[in-house]
Image (tube, rainbow, N blue to C red; front, side, top):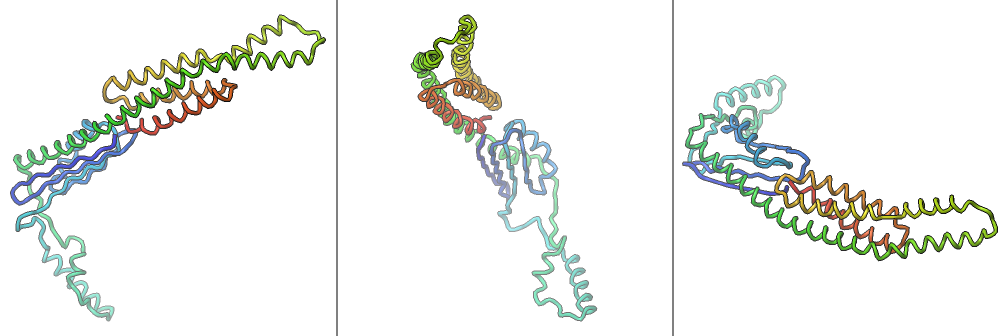
Length: 286
């Protein structure tokens, strides 16, 4: 979702520059700075940006530099004269010295500089329109390059989780055997006590079922495949990938809570580490 695009063009004595910057955001958060002479086109530009970029914290800047001899900004002499007379009167009334540097004070006063806003010619706006489109296209190219690198990162991380998932079965038999051994040791210590063997058997089955992780493994494997399918489905999948990450996280957490085995817990921790790296970067996906 991050990106930067810039484009420039010259028309007579003007240089038109458009810059667009995009950062991560759940929705489109657009900030537009547009020179006064094109302010009437702001809504049209905002609509185009929202359609083109969809999401992100976007800073859009359109400004014009004069490269010729004339400027559309003029010093407003009557206004400056009026300010000067008022300052002189106030200085006299308050019996204070008049300023020594009149220009530095007067030019900072409101409306000291007036800018003549002229109607935008069709040929001029057509050029500006092309510059805006070029800048947006450059940003989209930047985003695409970023997306291609992110694809490789996600592909690698999902593959790592899949490989870690394949390690789980080798600890399962040992894990169940350890539990059975602990229970048998405990039973040997109460030998001679009378208990309901049928009930005991039911409790054992229930206890071992609680340790069974086959469902979690199956769901996790499906979520990992679904993540890759969604990533290959085209643009606009960022939010969906985020939701899938949440589901992957749930299965990994459940796997960890049922692990009851030191080595299996290490595998789960590695899975969580890979997933966290995906979560950090999935915010960049449109």
